[in-house]
Amino acid sequence: MPLVLAGRPDSWVRRALRDALGQEALGIEVAAEADTVAIAKRLVLAGLGPMVDVAAMVRAEILEGRLRAVPLGALAITRLLVMPRGREPSPTAVAAAGLLRDCAREMLASGLWLGARAPTTSAVPDARRR
Image (cartoon, rainbow, N blue to C red):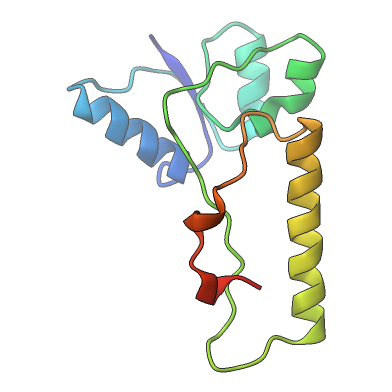
C-alpha cells in the first residue's frame, strides 16, 4: 500500500518502518513525501494514502473524527531526561524534570497521549531515577 511519508528519511519513525518491513522482505511504496507532518496530514486528508507516525501527531484530527489511528504491533518510544553523572542537578533541572513527569502522567491518565502507556517501574534502573 503506498504511504505518505513525513519528516526526514533518517527519522526514528522511518527507520522503524524500514526495519519492520525489511524483516518481512517488503519495501516501502511511497505515495508522497512531505517535509513536515502538517503537510503530510493534508496529503492523507486529500486521500493520497495512509501515513505511519505517532498518533500524537494527528491527535486533533482523530478527536474530530477526520482521521483514525491504528496501532502497529509493539512499536515503542522511550523519553529520557539525561543529566551528567557526578554532578547534582540544578534546581531548574529538578523542576523541569518534575514538570515533564507530571505532564506525561496527566496526558497518560487523561488519554490525551494517544497510544501511549506508562513504563513499568522496573524499566528504569534505580540509579537513574530522580
